[in-house]
Amino acid sequence: MNLQRIAFSLNTLALALITAVLGGAFVEQLAFGELPCPLCLLQRAGLIAVGLGFLLNLRFGIQPMHYGVTLLGALVGAATSVRQILLHIAPGDPGYSKAVFGFHLYTWSFLSFVGVMGGVAILLCLTDKYQSGRPISPGRITGLVMLAFLAVVCGNLLSTLLECGFTQCPADPIGYMWLESLVRTIKTY
Image (cartoon, rainbow, N blue to C red; front, side):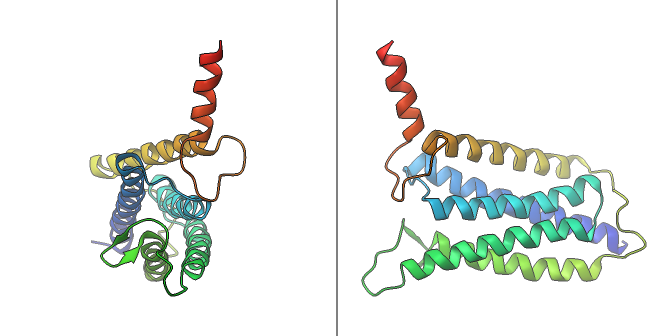
């Protein structure tokens, strides 16, 4: 197995993990009513950018520029995660949302973004400059992972639109502001 095939498989695995994380946050939002705050939405945007870099590698061939997109997304996500951690670091502060295995989702988010940065550094070392850029035709599993990622991204974008509309999201969201506004408008007619 050559380095390009290994890197392609690792990109598929990374995109599957990003899809699972985004999907898990989306399920928590829908199933448990945990609406994402503005910083949470920025972390999701960082995850989407990370996934986009991996998706570009899978679709158009592995290129350092695509890893650059991934790294920029990870930097944005890590910065917003740290910001949220620092907001809730005071003793007695319960944090935002429930803890999972002792950490809040924004702490897990930070750890994930740091892991992505380390993983991309390793993947860049595996990139062979003479073979990069030539796409490998994705198999069925890779195609399904790519479609699942796009579906989760579309779901997150739609829910964000319903939550915030075209205005700034509330700092402590309690409902789908734009959706409720649309329902009220429809009821008045």
